[in-house]
Picture 1: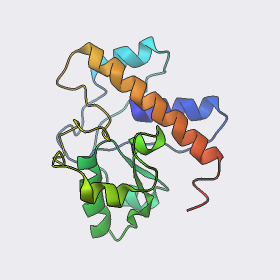
Picture 2: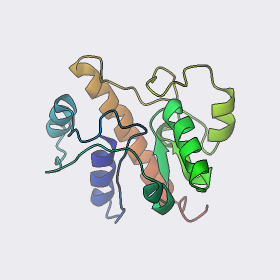
Picture 3: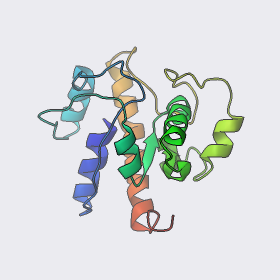
Picture 4: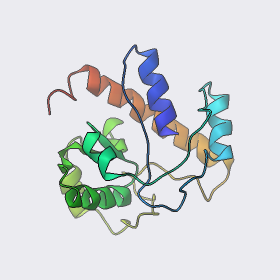
Length: 167
């Protein structure tokens, strides 16, 4: 959802950004967009990709990315380890919720070290996490879309303000 929302929001703002998504595990490898997510995105007016298959983030992707966004603190911890193993600076790692003001911007390392024990990669119960609607009902996808849209808007404000260049 976030890849689609961020890409289209950037395009509407006239920004030419390269946006891609990947997971932190191989659990969904090869699967397309969840039908419930597709329904919510379509209803909100987003264009769905003709082909999108889930995959685990690669070393090459982490190295080439200007910004790596984690949807949960658990994902962020996994990405920190992956990036360290690949020799990639963790300075470009942020939580999605940093861009909607839920988590103080730029404090990911301090935040992850001090956050409570909901760090399992499948957890999304903390306030710093984008809610994962996977095991819930259709309404969860609407709630997640609202969080994703707020983060995308904040990220683009940050980008326009020179955030990406200031690093």
